[in-house]
Image (cartoon, rainbow, N blue to C red; front, side, top):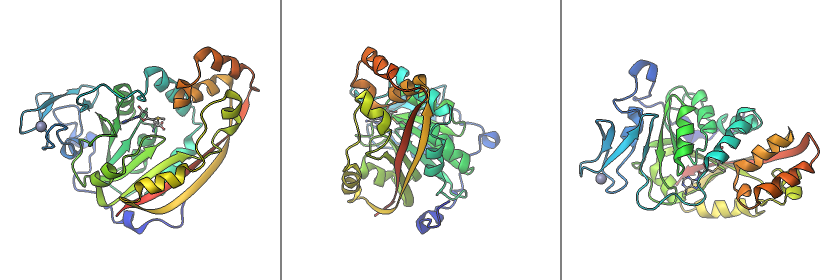
Length: 306
Ligand SMILES: C[S@@+](CC[C@H](N)C(=O)[O-])C[C@H]1O[C@@H](n2cnc3c(N)ncnc32)[C@H](O)[C@@H]1O
Ligand SMILES: [Zn+2]
């Protein structure tokens, strides 16, 4: 799709441990072995090994692996306030599975050559929709869905046969060993430049999808939702600059036609839903035309590690 593909990624050759569960099966715990190999103990940073349904480090710190295929490596405090609730996940799943954001998945993944292998980490994976799109495109890759919400991680691994999930906080040190990730996806989710850089291979790539200031303006204005700050991209570049060099930036806008229920789902997907109470929101949505017309407008930024 893009004529200019960063030469760096072309060097992200498939790794030897490319994982095909139909051939190798899952490891004795319900996580793909390449995911276990990439993880480290959140308490002492040592490697983790599978042992009797748990992951353990040499210091005997142990973490249960849920049979659904994820491990909770969140230590200390409870999840931050902005983790996804089951209601938000249901709303997002309904909206995404209806295909409204398929052009976003295509935009995100189409620059990645299909021979790229290794680990694809989706930071703030939500339902795992974009990770699935990436893994569909990269048959030699294995996925890891990272989210602070265990409900999200559970959804994400259910949606992805070739992926494991990790519950952890993107604002803290990631329980991932240095240089293990080939492709790091970040879609409408928090970014931690220093940690993203540490876990990426030197020839890896960071793909960030962000809304533009005009994203869904036709809905945001009448519903009085939070809008995107117009300097968001400049701020993001500045935050990432010590760790990454920006290679490319692509903008994409496309029309959406939505029923009121779909508008409701769309609003329920994001943080905007936390700022307006449910009854007020319903009333405002009732005043929209049906179908409502809106424009999705996003930016894909491609960064290479410094
Ligand atoms: C707006 S959603 C986007 C989800 C998904 N990428 C998508 O676009 O469908 C943001 C996601 O980031 C997660 N999240 C928020 N704060 C986080 C944190 N500190 N650490 C890890 N995940 C976080 C939320 O739980 C949620 O799943
Ligand atoms: Zn440990």
